[in-house]
Length: 192
Length: 203
Image 1 (tube, chains in turn purple, yellow):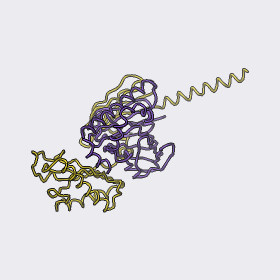
Image 2: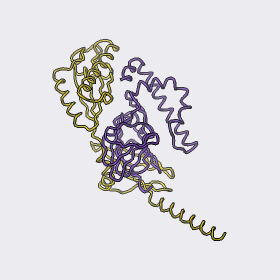
Image 3: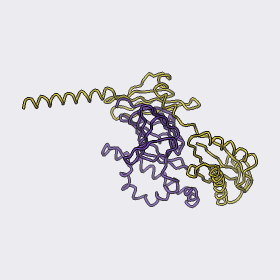
Image 4: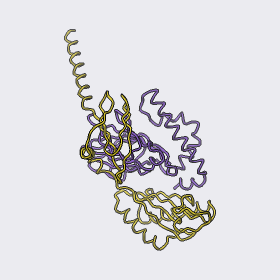
């Protein structure tokens, strides 16, 4: 609701520019961080670097996102759990998702997630996936989605994010990083 | 002293054996899938060690193991479908789009679209955890700013209607795009009924 109203106040070209700059900057920073430390990235690392565009990005973020929710559990079978801030919760149908959430399935579990841009991620039993990063501008379709599949069989169908940039949806695994023009793909991580 | 050294050696060896066993079992499979229309793109798998592998077309696949580059695999369509059967069956239903039309300069639906609203509600009821994205549009009659307001008003009106019908308020988003995205492109100031609409995405 709020974002719809603000969209009228902030001129569209300005919003797009800010948003794009933000996304590109984040991508760049993450690449640098990887090279420097070979570390798993998290949003806290980005904070000092974003100082320069922070004042503008606060406005842009508030206008582009109605809430912190990035997606929702649309299918949940068997035992499915959500790990957030170090705590574990049951994850039935309807539960909303945030960046950095971890979704886990037991031996009898499977789960289907839908994200704000209509991207879909579904996972079979004994799976674990971290929603490492999710940013999406519903006006420009710009943003990025990175999921880390620690174990399990996962299928992906990229949504509007892939319309703006085909490679903005990425999957990482313990051994590799997967991305491309393909909107539909699957990754299975076994025997960890 | 000798004895302690011996125990240390044994435990070191068993640790190495455990690590080897762990590595031997670790395996990743990557596959391109076709979309609903049978179209498929390409995928690049970039391993932490070794050269990237490119997969082209539906059911192209590769297998990765620790310490080496992924290798193209000759998995059949059936084998891939079987490996991902449970993940694929847990895919949520694809979003469904409805377009409803309005009377000129108004946030009131045309009689036909008022009936169509029933179909939208039926689709919402079919889904276990529905959410709705509503985007309002106008034709090009009038000022840009007025049309921004009218487009948002149309979307808000439908949002209110959906919430009245029982959809949780936080499951419905409304936005206006004014005259920026006409369904039928026209010159400015042209009254075009097909552009006076909201698009509702049931997800």
